[in-house]
Amino acid sequence: MKNIILALAIFTFLGCSESNQQKVDNAVSKTGDSLKSKLNKLNDTLREGAKDAIDKIPKVKVEVARTIPISLQWISFEEQGSAKISKADDGWYTLKGEQTNTNNEFLKIDGKITRVNNQTLKFVGTIITFVKSNNGSRPCEKTGEYTFLKKGDRANYRLQQMENCGGGRVVDYVDLYKLDDIL
Image (cartoon, rainbow, N blue to C red):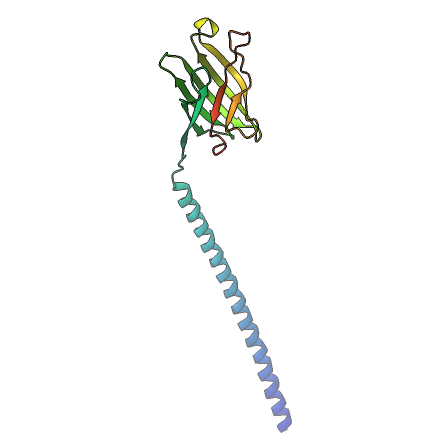
């Protein structure tokens, strides 16, 4: 009889113990799911807050204009003019400048420029040269797409469409300097 009571006691204890264990497992499972849900919700809230904060930061476009030397040989290689160059869109830069002398002769350039390769630049815009002894003492205006080329170890890029509007054998050496650090 003792053995039967002992067996019933052990069986009852084990039965309760499994039932209790199941209750504990269920509670842990529900709590774990609840905690996971709360953590996900908190992370979502933090992400939305961070995105809102980033969206509220003002967008600032920094335009840094640099100045480069330019020259037309008829005016002077030594007393160069200057042009402002600044980054535009899609790999292009705006370029605007002039060179003048005491005789009111000038080189003016206005457009945009981009690098094609190590020696070649593409310019789209207007180049005007005026030298009293060229083109019947009238300005020579070129508007369109032009190529500037750097040859050998020269420091300058030279306009390749260099024939003056007056024609003949008159050429204008329009040079741009110090572009390798910019483009």
